[in-house]
Image (cartoon, rainbow, N blue to C red; front, side, top):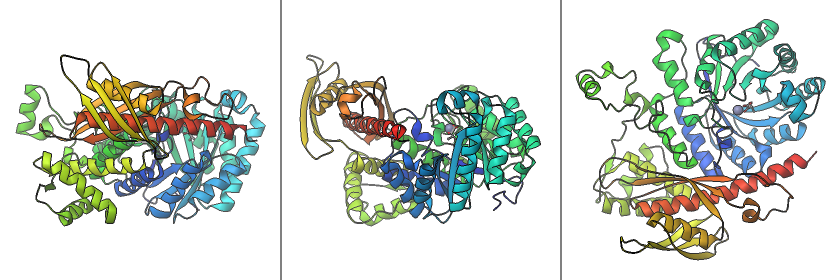
Length: 539
Ligand code: KIV
Ligand code: ZN
C-alpha cells in the first residue's frame, strides 16, 4: 500500500510529542493528558500522531490504546523495537484506530551495533527483516527507521532499507538520532540513499532530526528539498536531550516561505499557539520568551523604530501575522454574572466538551476567578481547564496551605498534602522566602527529599489581576529511597527530575501546586526507570 501523497508538494506532519517529546528530562504525561494533547494535535491537522511506546509500561500502552480508540483523523502510530514482543504490543495498542501504524526501528551505525546492541551487521539485517515482516502481517502501514543513520555507513544503511522495503515497509524514516548532521550533509546522505535504493521512491521518505547543534529544523527542510515528504517533529521542540525539530517552526517555515520552497502541510496554523500552550502546561516546560513562532516575544517590538514601523505597516518588521498562529485569539469574554450555560458554550468554542461534575468544578473555579478578575478571557479559561485536568490526575495534591510572611521574621509555611493513597500529610518549615518555605514544608510533609532545579513565574494575560502561572522542575535527592524499588541498582547514579505547572490568581498557591505536581511527576518517572530496567532484563 503506497502512502506517497498524490500532491508532490504536500509534506506530511508526524508529531512525536507524546513519544520522543515525553523523553525530555522531567516530562511524564498521564493518559488523560496524552489524550487531550492528541485531540488538540488532531485539531491542528497533523497527519500522524506517534502516541507512545506501548511496551515501555502498562500506562504507556493504555494511553496509546485510548488515543487509537478516540482520536479521529490522523494516523495513530505506536513505536516498537525490532523484536516480536514490542511489535505485538504496539499492534495491540494501535489496532483500534481507523488508521493504525506500527513504527519499528533498529540501529545501523557501527557505534550502536557494537556497543549498544552488542550484535553484528548480519544480526541487524535479520532483525530488520523479521520486524518489518511481522509488522506488515499485522498492519498495512509500517514505518521503519535505521536508528543513528547519519553516523552509519550509507551502503550498509541502504542494504537494510532495501530489506525493509522488500518486506513491505511503507515509510522509511532517516533519524539524525544524536543531532550530528548538517543540512548539506543530510541532503547528500538522503540523495545517496535514493541512488542506492531506487525502490525508496515508492515509499514515503521521512526525516527525524534532533537539535543538539540547533540544526533540527534546517536539517529537516534540507531533507524535504531532496525528496522527503514526512517530517517528524514535536510541539515546542520537545524531545530527547536538546529536543526534536519544532513542529510549529516547520509549519510556519513552509507556510511563510512557500514562495521559496513550494511545499505545504495540512496544518490549521491558527491552532498553533493553543497547542503550544497546552503542551507547555501539561509538560511543565515553559516556552522561552524568544522562542520562534510561539515565544511571548515572537511578535513583540521593543525598539522605538520597530514600533513606529509596525504601527504604520505591520509588514515592515513582521514576516508572520500573530493572528495566523492563533496568538491573538483572545476574544471570548465572560464576567462575574455569566452563568453555567455561558461558560459551557465558551468552553465548547475552545473545543472542550464539559458536562456533569467537570462542568460543576470548572464553574466553581470560574466563579472564584471572576470574583478576583473583572474579565475572564479565552486564555484564562484555557488555563483553568488545563489546570483542572492536571489536578484531577496528579499523584500528590496540595490540599491547603498557610504562609506567614513578614519583613521582621523568617517566613513560615504549613501545608496539607494528599498522598497518592489518599492520606493527608502535614508538614511545616521556616524558609528563606515564602515560596522557599512552602516548598520545604511540602518536602517535610511528603518525606521525599526533593531539590528545586528550575522555577519560572509568568502571567497568563496582561493586567494586575492576571492569573499567575508557575513552572517548576525538581530533582529527587535519593530516587531509590523515594520509590523503594526492588530492582537492584535500577536507579543508581540516575538523576530523576519532574516538571509541574499550575495556574491560580495567588502565586504562592500556584507555586505550591506546581511543586507538588513536579514531585508527583518525578516519582512517576522514577517508577518508569525501574520498569525500563526490568524490561532491559527480559530476554
Ligand atoms: O531519534 C531516533 O532515532 C528515534 C527513533 C526511535 C526514530 O527517536
Ligand atoms: Zn528521536
